[in-house]
Image 1 (cartoon, rainbow over the protein chains, first blue to last red):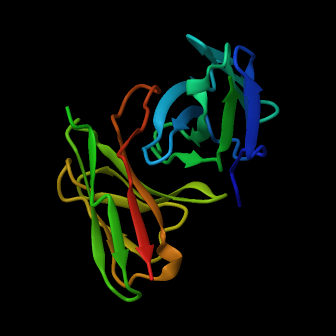
Image 2: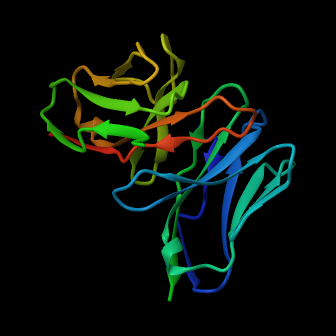
Length: 112
Length: 114
């Protein structure tokens, strides 16, 4: 049972445009969400997080939106840059459990 | 500051062999975990620990053992390797915060079981 789902395996975007990566979850107990970026042959690196008490969090070019009623979150990257080309994972956790469940990832390709 | 260090980076095993994947962190993090990454499956949690002497199972624990005798180290043991355990393994750690915790990952171990 996949509790965290990223239904788009890949996404291509032109440089300078917006990239929108989506993530859905099924466990209503999740209250903390993170996004990670992964380059080949490297470990995932943290991008941005959001707690369920918020519906939006921004950090530079990256914004995460959370829709709790739809159990959906999205990562917006504006403007997209070729260096953003990587695999993006969303992850979810219930506070205090320290058990992070990841999605299957979306491969983003930013075209120059 | 080394962060999370995994060794070895690459390993080839024969079916039935045993080995230990090493993971060490120097950030004094209480939480440590092991994930495996497979094509189309994302990152799946194998085992995790919330402190020395405390471990628990994740999503895919079968075939793996862990122990946590120190805060710094969290080794992952394969007692009898199987081809289904061919994967890339990542160790991660986190501090205990106030709702803003994030995982720090090692660079991974690529394991092939023949």
